Length: 223
Image 1 (cartoon, helix red, strand yellow):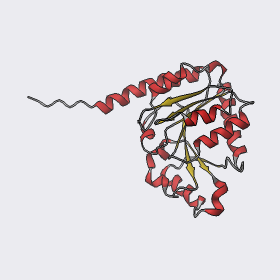
Image 2 (cartoon, rainbow, N blue to C red; image 1 turned 60 degrees about the vertical axis):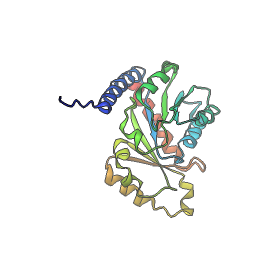
Image 3 (cartoon, rainbow, N blue to C red; image 1 turned 90 degrees about the vertical axis):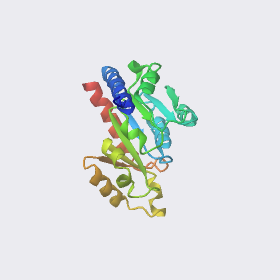
Image 4 (cartoon, rainbow, N blue to C red; image 1 turned 45 degrees about the vertical axis):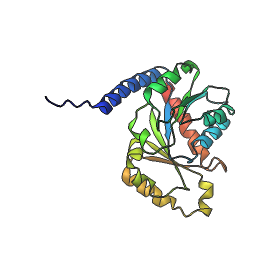
């Protein structure tokens, strides 16, 4: 008898891509730019979002979907900074969010009253790289407390991202991190990356980050 191999992973990924396409159409219909924040654990995703909500929350209507393996601690931190919805997705051990979870989370988000949506993915530089969530773009965060060669070690994540945000740059005087070298390594992996250099603690670089977000909202409204 012939052996029949069922490519379960391919079927799961194909179904995810179908759902992601639906999410993307839904977000485009409401003209809501959506950014999937990805990084290793501890890179500062939640802290950057806290500061962004604090500084832009009165100007832009920002909704957030957060993914975490076991707790909703990050969602609770962000909810304290905004009057808009922060939707927690607890993956129960999974190392990434998927399009179905985002689709379900959006069912309770008033997209007609939303200017900008952030998806804070699970802290992992491997799993989330392969999963389309229907976002406008992936944004990879890269803390200066990490190794400069992070993009070379995890190339797919940097290849799949359109933007890279260096975080915690206020620590540069105290850590052996060459930010120019790190940027060069990242460009070697993905030459079209756009970079931001930020510190949520000292405010360095945040105006450039905020200008980018404002422009994304303005461009989405103009379409």
